Image 1 (tube, rainbow, N blue to C red):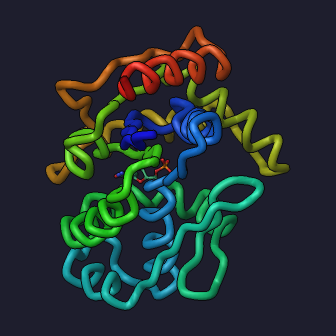
Image 2 (tube, helix red, strand yellow):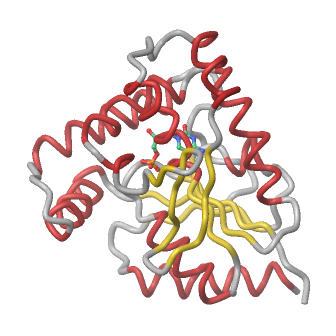
Length: 223
Ligand code: DC
């Protein structure tokens, strides 16, 4: 059967990763979380004490950084070389700094090349901010998932608590609003709905409902 590319974009906390994971498993596709790649670069830059706003320096870092994504039982695992960083890229420090790194053209161009390579054979669900607009403009199915800031913050809050992390709901709302602003206002590949993407507001929908809707859309795109 034909294997298509599915691009899932949207702001932080819209449920993209949970939904992309389930959709990929329904379709027997590979799930690729591109945010994890930006997070891995941010972690490496923080550890090396680099200036996160210096594009050329981060461009040099990209040349030496071997970021690998592999499917695991609990979802995607992330490695820098041989070192696993799946959990290390989810700390607040990385989360609060990733937008600076993600707006550097040198970082984006290197990651876009890697992402296209991962997607070239199809059979993938890729989530991010610029997948439908920049990375895979020819994807057969593009969806822009969103939800209100309040709903997205409470979803992250529940996730943090489930992971045993400290969590402050009001702080999360402020962080998400700020990250939305930085991601949508940056010059290079801002967060933006592709003209041919389907818009889905998930504020009032549960995960099963969203996955069912996307499975329907994917089956439509396969015909
Ligand atoms: O999805 P996430 O929260 O893990 O993404 C982390 C950051 O990376 C987010 O602030 C925006 C950025 N990002 C991006 O600019 N382009 C992508 N394709 C994916 C993520």
